[in-house]
Length: 192
Image (tube, rainbow, N blue to C red; front, side):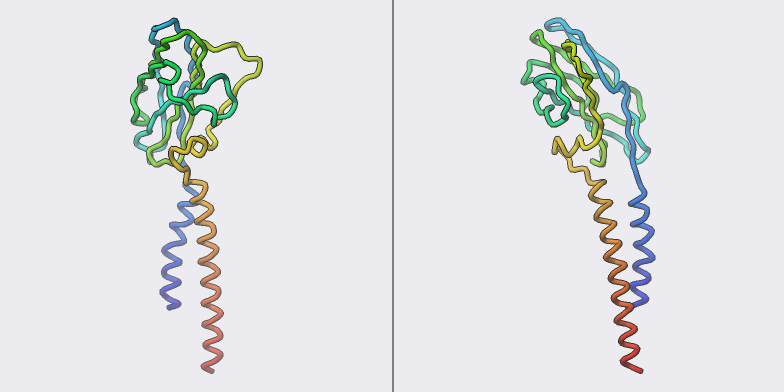
């Protein structure tokens, strides 16, 4: 039993340590797109997305808010709710040529959106701000990539929880090994 446990720990330990140390990255260019459109006019921009070799493709979607917002949670509307028509590939291959994002506004006004780009593994995502005919804001609006997936709820970002789970699993494995070692010592004392 002890040899089996030692063999199991030798096999699992490198896997656990490798998984805790792994990370992924993804970036897009540009980070923000501004359009000045007239009614019915179509405007397009090229976007390039780069990621690690472990990621082959990404899912792309867009969300819109009712005004300039600071919280990613407020980007919860579809483009059609505002009379906007967006056109872009829903699945893009990373590290390839750029893809085109096009938008058309049926009515005049200011519109604020976010293009969400999620990796194929569902671990990371990034947002590209979209502004159509923006009103001048006194305060700069900033968006970071932290927790975009959790705020939208489209895919659960497991990287954080996976690390915590593996840490506690590793602690439980050490605790189990120590407990078995104590029982083994007690058993040897009992036999003598």
